[in-house]
Every structure is written in structure tokens, then in C-alpha cells.
View (cartoon, rainbow, N blue to C red):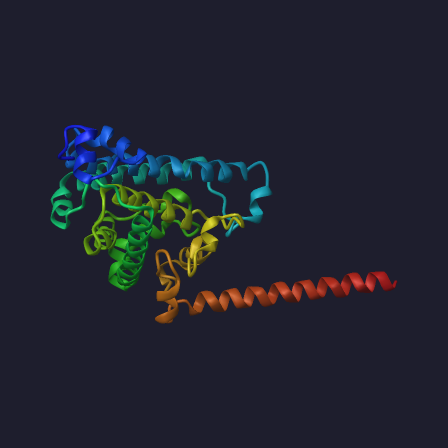
Length: 299
């Protein structure tokens, strides 16, 4: 909670006028407890789980009447019905109500322990970006090893097979998993803020962006206009889709966000081999078409 009664008092304490964003933050949060602010994550997660995937749902359902989006579908032979998608969403909401929501309610002492701030001044844009980069890198590295554990025979059969029910993933399948897996994968998500604690706003952004990224990765579509394609070493939907396509036997593409861990530890060889093979087939097909077309012109 902000320890100032008025904007003027806050300005005096900081030795400068508040920025517009700081004034808005003061007006919103000054009378709210840190616990109340932290619990906003529940609302954010519900909104993200429910609404971010909706455009993908409409695109998927439109494929029953038009094949226009098939050019972007990574596994175009797979079509999900409304009942398939709604079953996945119900599973996610059940997990949200029984596991994710209650976990958010009781995990506030950990936020106090690592000293996430909610007062003034607000962090600069550069500070927020730097911390988010750290959070993504830490989460990605830690998640990589936990994910590899889940692909052991025991880990897959006991827990991870639930997430792999969707061999051609859809957006709602991102958080679709066994409750124990959801809890364990919360550790990488929390580890970054524990190492480099920041402001509550940064924490909100981190939780939101990580879930949005997971939905994009599980979208099942490789859109050429996706801005994440410009992020160095970013895996994306095509990269992770291969992991789901191979399924339980997959020992490839474990990384959640970036590709460097798979490259360093040699767990992307199957993916790279398949991609190289498909490229050769594509080039061979183009060459054959040119020869056929050329032969036709000579006649």
C-alpha cells in the first residue's frame, strides 16, 4: 500500500511531480492493500485463459466452411470441432477454479518474502523490459529441465500425458495439464521474480505475457505476420507443434519459449532433421514442376 495520503505528499517525498502513470497508479492503488493488488492476477489469468484464444477458435471453426486458413495451419489435416474446443476449455476452467485460483490466493506470503513492490516511484520502461527479459530466460531454462523430466517414462505416464492429449495443439491447450504439472511448472514462473524482484505492475505483465506466449505457442497456426518471429531464438508455434505432433515419444523441442537450450543440449535434432527433409521435398517438387512446365512450353 502506498504510504502517502495525497498526490502532493507523494510528490514531496519523491522530490518531483508524479508522472501521469504514477498519478493514475496512486489514484487506483493508494487505498488498496498489496494482497488485493496481487489477487488481480486471478482476474488477469481468467481473462487471458478465456478470451485470448477466442480469435483462434473462430479461425478453427471457420475451416469447416472454408480452407483459406489451412495455408497457416501447421497440421492442416486436423480439424477441431466446437465440442473438442469446449471440452478443452472446460478442463482449463476446472483447473483454474480448483488449482490456479486457490494457489494465487494462498501464495501471497511468497510475494512478501521476495519483496515485490507496489508503491512509488513506478519502474522505468527500460527497467520493466530488462526484468521481463530475465524472467523469460530464467523460466525458459528451468522449464526446459522440468519438461524433460515429464518426458521420462514415469513422468509422462503419471502426469504429462494429459497435456499431450492434443497432438495438434490449440490455444486453450496451453494450460491444459495435470494438476501436479501445473503446480510444478509454477516454480519456473516464480523463480525469475524471486531472483530479480520488481514492481507489482512488472509482475502483472510477466504473468500475462507468459500466458499469452504459451497460447501463441500452442495455437497450431504459423502466421507470417506474428511479431514474435522477430525475437531472437524464439521458438513459436511451429517449433512447439512438432513436440506435440511426435507426442509421448518426443525427446525434442522441450523449451517453452526460446530454442537455445534444445540446441545446446542436442534435443532439437529430430525437429531440424524433419525440417531439412521437408525443405528438400519442397525444393524437389518445385524443380519437378518447372521441368513439367518447361516441357509443356517446348511442345
